[in-house]
Amino acid sequence: MKQLLTLIAILGTHTLSQAQISAIDNNRLPQDNHWTYFSGRYEMTVKSGDQVIPATINLRMKRDSIVWFTISANMGIQIQVAKGVLLRDTLHLADIYHKEYYVVPVAYASQYLSMPIGVKQIQNLFTGQPLVDTCNAGNIHKDASANYVYYTTMVEPLLIKSYYGYPGQTPQTKLDNEGYSQLRITEISSPNNAKDKATLEHNQWLDVSKESNGAFTTLPMELKITTTTAQQTAQVDLALTTARYDAIPSYPFKIDDSYKLQPLPSK
Image 1 (cartoon, rainbow, N blue to C red):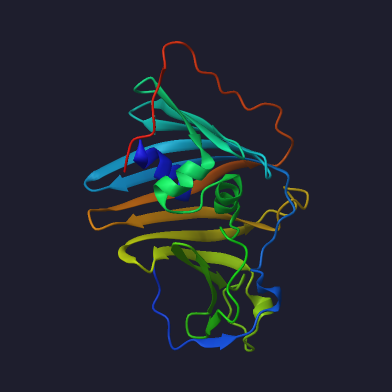
Image 2: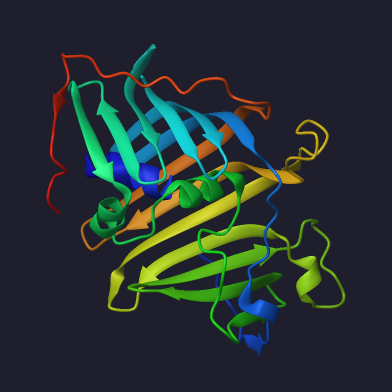
């Protein structure tokens, strides 16, 4: 169950040279939010220990309101193994394989996973926006050699670093904040527990402004999620294969009498 929650919660590191610190107006991170609806299908590979599990996730989202999803495992044929709906205050999650379901308050899920989780964070993960959209005063760092600028945010008990890169492949001659607009890497760690870390990578940004009628400027086609603990490292790779941006008429989620309601497992 925790693996499913972790995938939902956070569904590459780079060596940085000596950083230069500069000021930031209003402590706001760069973001590009104009969308209302998004539907996507992702090919997914889950790697944990010696296990490699190919799967597919279908996603429907209404901004700031709902995240609906189904997960199907590839076992020669596609078999749906989980489905869920994340609302502003509650996660409803069904384990289809074991005929079990969970009703989890968002606040409890955040505490359980020791990381921010909610509609906004999950939607920002898939749309390539920062999980937390503010940073601490004076904590913008520029690295000319790696062509990144990164922002540091403290959200107790977490330290979040958001790395941005240039949209194009050609480095700019002048280093300024205006050129950095695409979120590339997010590192989530705890100053009190260096062994536990999550890294989110957004790659293959594509101009979808025409297809989305301006809802998005660009969208990441690839996501890579890596979680590291003292016991193991797990990785989730996602590749967007189809996307739609029109209004979504329904978010079907029904639990029949064959499912057993389960409490959230202890850590």
